[in-house]
Image (cartoon, rainbow, N blue to C red):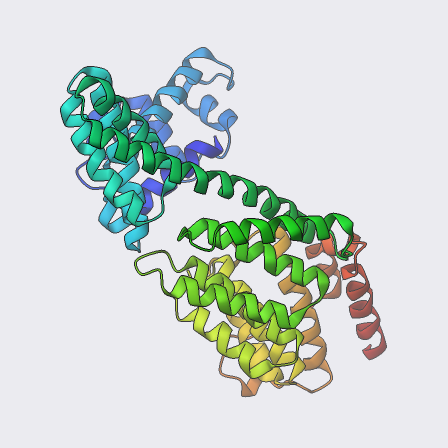
Length: 413
């Protein structure tokens, strides 16, 4: 059910018009329309609710299973009607979506017979994907082009050119596959453990990442370089080497800034972690400069990046004792319309901040009536405990913060 709901949300976000597969009522059977409307309007939250409403049978009923399968296939088919120009907000995203869509069409053509048309489409796609470092798709296209010019429409020059290009791209992909393994390992490590020692295992990974970086000096590949930069940053984070963190983030920012037309993801990521490194060194002005530059990329209001940046600015305000500014940030986040839809664990950290801000209000450090922003809700310690179940049970330090909050309010009362 979750995958169908995700497809419906994506297609709704695209505001599809004049697409007979979904928007034309006559194109859907009554039962398919019931399922679509029920899911779209939130009337059905589970297969059980949908099946009983449509068939008065449970979700294992064959008729419901067939209806659901056909409806999902229809939704997937409708994805191909998305307006690529509106769907992506960068040239890279538009190229990525259009290229995969056209490649799928070319494969269908190859299977059905019009080989020259399919090859022409693929050669056009290849120029675009090479421009935007989409190596995995380029390799699949080159495979077909080599077969075509090596056998069906023999052309030795083209065959050799694509063969040489294939070798180069395979080398890049092999490096990407290797660095992605270290990226996943290191990323999971810092997400799952509060304290990590720079042991022999991490030292060995640093040597391998350095070797990959050396091999990649002359390679201009967006995600290869992204993962190399990130691995180095995580290693320096484990080593608590803040100056090296600053250096590698600046190198990354300079590289991604040069990648015109690509997503701003790389620049925004390393601006953010550059700010975190400056925070650790007490360079609050530099940190704020980095975070505000990230905000210039207009992250989705209420989204994770939007909240994450405000989280760090909030911390700087607290460290500088700019409590009114911290109150404004907290109010804007918690009172935002999308806050209740945020991940539960993510919300709990804001509830923890809310509790400390409420303590500052109680001791007179903050006067909410003098701040022109929507006021926070009244604070109740029991509700706070109920809203932070994960942090309350956390054994890495957050549970201590929960106990401190309780003690502070007990002292006040």
